Image (cartoon, rainbow, N blue to C red):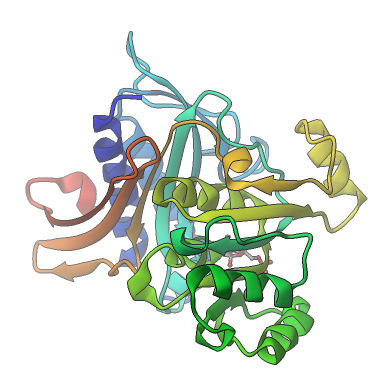
Length: 321
Ligand SMILES: O=P(O)(O)OC[C@H]1O[C@](O)(COP(=O)(O)O)[C@@H](O)[C@@H]1O
């Protein structure tokens, strides 16, 4: 993958973020998501890649655009063949209700690099580079917090654990509190939550708990690029999801995946803030344009770039739609 591709991919997340941010706070999550999907699909047409969506908006029969298996990009001769995991609007409710932390996101790898995760749940444990190697999903949350604290040379009481505010996490939250760590509950958006552990300034040290499996693969791509660490284990909700996982080539449903197994080889990752979150500002509109804030990363070099862009709608009418 050409290194300049990483800089091109950010245009795709910028366009999707601008489109959904336009509808921020209107209380309609489907509408916010749909405009992001449309914009992202259009933006891919400008990229000279031969891309296959491996994690997208759903199966072909349920998602008309950016469905799993869809080929995207201009696909001109010499275009790199890439697998793509995307979420045009991660945290649809956050955007629809004007809450912090929604992002638009794309991860890319060479062919076969991204786990074809079924649309089920995944138990996730993610930390930043300072705690790399200290996590183990076979151990209890308390044991993990002690190992993470030791590796980071801090007290467990200094750690902040982010988790989705869900009923299913009642025991987890109780245990984390009993261990002495601080807890930050989020309403949605555990991709941004996992990535936040890799940026010191966010104050988030650990992401724990169960969220979407496709989101787990996207997060793993970013974790790989930033040098953090992550483990994930599928948590199917019913027999149908187990069957679906098998069809997608997953033989051991209980397997614990490392970040390297979720997103193998060279990966690129780009995200643009829709609403302001822990490490990205949201889209800000002004007369005739807007400003976006994005992050672009490559696992090969570990370079992390924050990109602040000013878009003028009279010169780029496509962005104004
Ligand atoms: O809402 P659930 O069923 O607990 O699922 C959790 C998943 O939903 C999200 O919070 C938001 O997903 P959407 O953007 O599809 O609404 C993810 O970040 C998370 O992985």
